[in-house]
Amino acid sequence: MIKVEREAATVLVTIDRPEAMNALDVATLTELRDRLRELAADESARAVILTGAGEKAFVAGADIKYMSGLDVEQAKEWGALGHEAGRLLETMPKPTIAAINGFALGGGCELALACDIRYAATSAKLGQPEVNLGIIPGWGGTQRLARVCGLGVAKELIFTGRIVGADEALRIGLVNAVQDPVLDKAREVATLLASKSPIALRLMKELANRALGGDHAENLAAEGETFGEIFSSEDAKEGMTAFVEKREPRFSGR
Ligand code: HXC
Image 1 (cartoon, protein in one colour):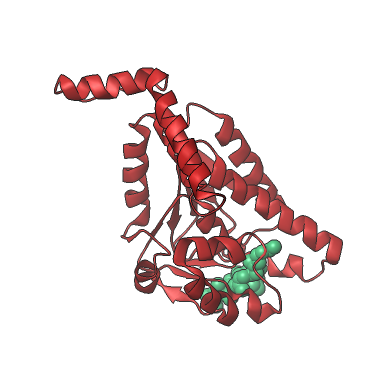
Image 2: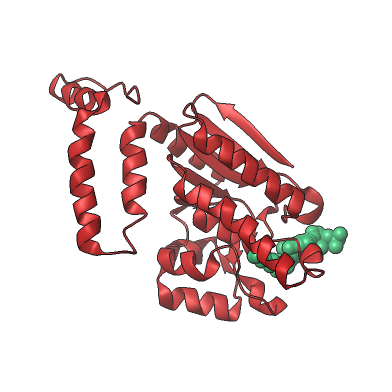
């Protein structure tokens, strides 16, 4: 099951399937996709944290018992469902943070990669072991790992299926920081982000998502255009006025 808990403007989404190390079956992944859809549209949710219940696992991957019975068409649908969840994390107009406790393997690592920011507990173990099952990463791992860690690191990890610990994950840029308890770190940053202008965050996320693809000159032009447009927002006026008046800004999201 998926738990959704609110603390002011931040939302904690917990994947809770303890009998299978939070591995995702159809019911759990469908529920996750549905909750993420709701959160994407919910303006009162300013930052979203994704985590796994318990100490042992973030998500140990897609449910292998379920996958072992799939035919080609069913496998494509299964891939598409995970892609939907990943796209929501990657494109929802607010920051998403993965708080990685224990195993984040296969589809679990891929969901974390779809988040904007990743924090790991010292117990975290991340990797794409799909190759050991005779399959390939299917929820974004062949693309997003390279975007996050570079192509050379990504190819080594997806070809070998090697699992990395928290320290190596930090060194190769797979996670942004390592801290126990990892949820405290994720909450602290989510609260900080929720205090910033949601308009600025939405626009930065949209632009940053273009950074590794498309035409560089066009992307810079889009940044220039967007930079101008944001001057029509109350948040821009408030932010700059607060600086001049030597006080903290209070952003309204307008
Ligand atoms: C189904 C899983 C599971 C998974 C763990 N379990 N991972 N069930 N799918 N991905 C279940 C085990 O079967 C077991 O239940 C229970 O969780 C506890 O796991 P154990 O193996 O007994 O624990 P441990 O020895 O501590 O080992 C933990 C582990 C190992 C290292 C995480 O379970 C493991 O290697 N799991 C598979 C990891 C993996 O290959 N993930 C990638 C999947 S492919 P029972 O009832 O049997 O005791 C993928 C593709 C995504 O994610 C893209 C799809 C399109």
